[in-house]
Length: 171
Image 1: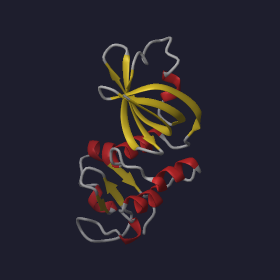
Image 2: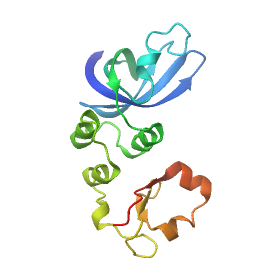
Image 3: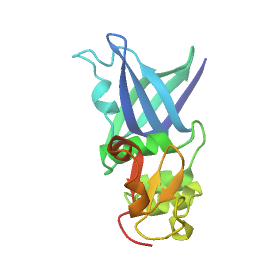
Image 4: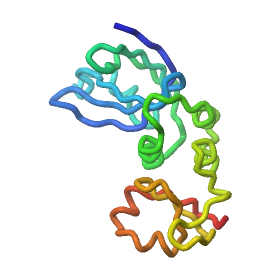
């Protein structure tokens, strides 16, 4: 059984069973990871408030029958909206540290343009995957492609709300 301690930001939380919770964290040392926290949904849980999405924390976890979060201590807030944290959870690879993204979060200077550049999708050179134009770019997560204002509207509204990151400014 290995025990690890690292800084992290909580990205998402999911219920698991009656009392347990499953949390997606972006850690400084290990990248994105998902772990179970036993009894975190109990009303008397002292762990649950530290694991709320958007919380920057110091976390201790073990690798025994999957990843289990043992302890967490809140150090502050990330200053990133919940929806952007969910998008980050979808984009970041599991188990791969991303020091550039971590630095942006730690310095409270997160921006999607910089994040895309760090992750290898530089929006400065992006063209719409459908028509090839460069105005008003949006990133469609499931296909990992950029689309312009016109072409993104062709996607169903529900898809646009749950899987599109808008960069709002023409490139």
